[in-house]
Length: 428
Image (cartoon, rainbow, N blue to C red):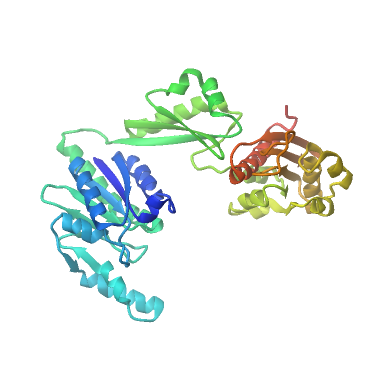
């Protein structure tokens, strides 16, 4: 089955909202062997919506839209596509009654007139039940078997409806299409696995992989550099689920053998989660001292549920006076070496460990920019220190990017330095 995805909304074209819906749909449908052949976005205009859907139907005959099902004047997806199919809009009395009761129960009043349009449906359409919001989805099909499935744009609602309603419909149709083609055996899928690496450049990974860099065992390999590092994504196509999973497992093992030193997890693994799990397993507690990252490292650690049994707290020592008073950094050390220096980073880590009563102290001090850099310490210069029971490891980095990117990369490397230290305490 070949499908196109159309995400609708001016906010997508203006760049204020990132199209996470299209990405989620593509991943979920590919995992069950449904091929997404095109993804596009269009604004809220009725003519633009109709034109985009018409073109998609001419190409593939199967379209999923998200967005434009709400109660406001710019929610024109249903009437635009209904007109394209030559269908009138009719009131769904059952859904209208549900909306009115829902509004009375939740808000204690009458349903606003604008919300009534959420109960309008194209004549002859199939309603897709929305258990996560007020706007139902729509399945509209013509006499030629061409169809459009309309889902809400709110990501939580769209994902829930894909799992509850649309996904089962598509899997059933895909199975019927396979049977009609006379295909036998299990259906094929498109599946991916990702190995996450950090603190190593994309080109260095390619050099280490050698011939594997071009893919292996029929699997394609993509390099995905980002703030956290370089993700290596393997993808299997046109295989059964069991064959794809086996090939991906072999492929990930082969990649890991070449980049094990820099690999910290797979798929959506977060470095903060990795560190917390390692500390928990070893019975270690952790505290942080942050200057240029301004609490970002602590925020990443506390965003992981259950982190309180490992992470004790931190000090945001942005000013030198706080480094002295709260962390015990000697004033003469700051005068001699400057705040962005190896001795200061090491003393900050020690201060965090000792004053918060942790086994591990982690410190970050640097120049995040855009100003403040010098020839000796350009923007992006960051010193990181990890103190484990008094044994200290330090590292100087020069990160690229804007202020936000430098700060995030600094927090990522601080976590990586903890990982390296716990793996090899007597580090290089």
